[in-house]
Image 1 (cartoon, rainbow, N blue to C red):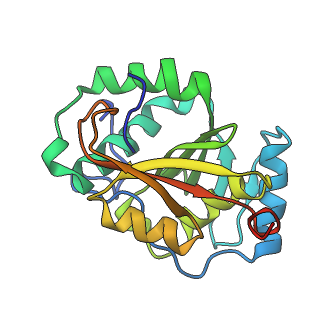
Image 2: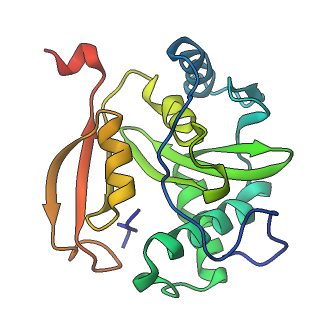
Length: 207
């Protein structure tokens, strides 16, 4: 997603290469009741591990010890989805961004399988700032499971993504997000045209 404030070094997970895909579609996601159970744990501040209804998948809140891996997932995914913006930041700059902004300002959750981080979501009051899933994990409902953690808080949510990120836009629109406005990108660091989405819980959207 655009950096509107203004890969980490180390071994890569087996499925993680420089050619990865950001914000994947979903299939066979957890039931709504199971998703709500997960989300109640997240929004209530619990940090204990929760098992998703996806076989072998673990969702948990991340700590600073997970920061480098989260930055790596973000950068590898970003570079594949938006190759014309790859190289915009160094691994050190990514780590600093995650330390000083993402982990300092957001709650960050990750999806793991056999100890490998497959996806992340970072959110704060009313906003989703980051949501990335690796390509080897797409089509399994991981993005939807991470999104449900936030949505089940029952409050309006907004997020930015790039206009040219068609996969991300399809994902969000499939999950009920609607376009609020589009810009020429002058307000984001990448100077890439972007789009603001908003989601409201059904009971609020119908009022």
